[in-house]
Image 1 (spheres, rainbow, N blue to C red):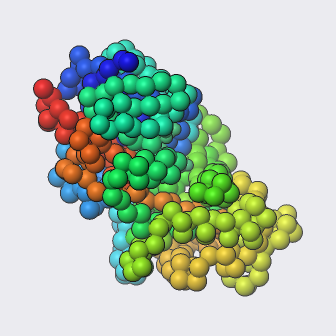
Image 2 (image 1 turned 180 degrees about the vertical axis):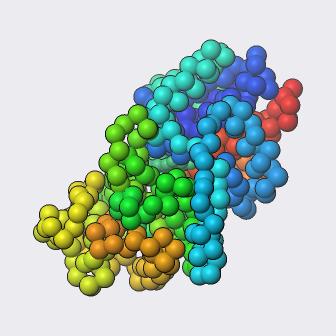
Length: 427
Ligand SMILES: Cc1cc2nc3c(=O)[nH]c(=O)nc-3n(C[C@H](O)[C@H](O)[C@H](O)COP(=O)(O)OP(=O)(O)OC[C@H]3O[C@@H](n4cnc5c(N)ncnc54)[C@H](O)[C@@H]3O)c2cc1C
C-alpha cells in the first residue's frame, strides 16, 4: 500500500488551499489529492466571486480578524485576484444607517462561472507541476483511524496526515464518518430564504458594488449577488431517505459573455436551534420537501406584484405584458407564502422593504422571488486543537466541517490545518 505524507479529500478551495500551503512549506512532501468528480465541483466552479474582507465567509466562532487577515494574505499570494472597484456608496450607506441596516464594504474579485473553470484547471496544473498526485473520479469512503489508512472506491492509501474537505455536498458523508469515528458534532444552524431576480435598472447599486453585503435586523442578509450576465439555477440535494429537493442558487458569466441586463441575489435568514437542539440538516430536508410538494417537484417562483396583492403567480403572470422580463429559471409559478415558515417570511419581507428604501425600485412588481434557497452550515465537529484537528492526524475543514462559508475562508482553513501539521513555516 502506498504511503503519503498528506492525503487530501476534496478538490474545492479548502482542499486546494491545503495542497498549496503544504507544498509551500514542505516542497519535498508526498501529497495525494482525491476528488470524486471529474473537476472540483465547489465554489470555484460556481460564479467564483471571492471576498477578501473579514468576516465575510469566516465563521466568527473560529476566526478572529488577525488570524483571518494573516491567512488572507497567503490566499491573495496564491490566487492573485484582480479586485473590483467600489464607488458612490455614501448615499446607500447613509440611507442604510438611518434604517438600522449595515452595508459592509468588502474587497471582491469576480471571475464568473467560465472564469472559475479556467482557474481550477490552472490551479490543478500548478499542483501537478509541484509533484502533487491528483486522482479525479475517486470517492473517499472510509477512514481506518488506528492504522491511518484511507479507503476509497478504487484503493487504500496510508497517510501521515489526512485532511478531509468534502464541502456542503459532502455533508452527509462527513456526518456518517464522524459518527463511525465517534467524533462529536452539532449541526444546529442553517440559512433559509429566497432569491430575487430583477433588472439592473431596478437594482443599479451593482454598477458601483458588484455584490453589496447588507445586514438587516433579525439576522437577514443579502448573499451572493450575480449581475449583468446572471442567471438562477436549481441544485439537487438528496435527503437521508433518498428523496430529493431543489435549492435555488445564482450564477453569472465573466465579461467575455454578452450581458442579459439581469441581476439576482439571495436574502437569507439565519436560523439557530437551541432547545431542543434540532438538526439543521433534517430541518432543511423538511423545508425543501415541503417546497417541492407545493411546487410539483420544482422550486416556486412568484412575482413581487402578485405577492403584494396576496395572490399566487400563474403561467399567465409570466407571459402577460404587465411584466417585462422572463425568469431565467423557469420553475413553478405559485405562492411562496404557503410554503415558507411565517417567522422567516416576516423577517425577509421586512428586509425587502428596507432594501427597497435604500435602493428604490428593487421591489418592482416584475421582480421575481424564487424559493427555497437553503444553505446548510457545517457540521461543527469538536476539534482537539485550533487547527481543525478532530482526531490525531485527522483534520476536517471547509464548508462541510463549518470552518468556512466561502471560497477564501475555505482556502484559509486549509492553510490553518497545514500550520497545525507543519508549523507556521514548515519543518
Ligand atoms: C452555486 C454556488 C455558488 C457559490 N458561489 C460562491 C461564490 O461566488 N463565492 C464564494 O465565496 N462562495 C461561493 N459559494 C460557496 C463556496 O462554494 C464554498 O464556500 C466553498 O466552495 C467551500 O469550499 P470547500 O472546499 O469546503 O468545499 P467544495 O468547494 O464544495 O469542495 C468539496 C469537494 O469535495 C469533493 N468531495 C465530496 N465528497 C467527496 C468524497 N467522499 N471523496 C472525494 N471527493 C469528495 C466534492 O466533489 C467537491 O469537489 C457557492 C456555492 C454554491 C453551491
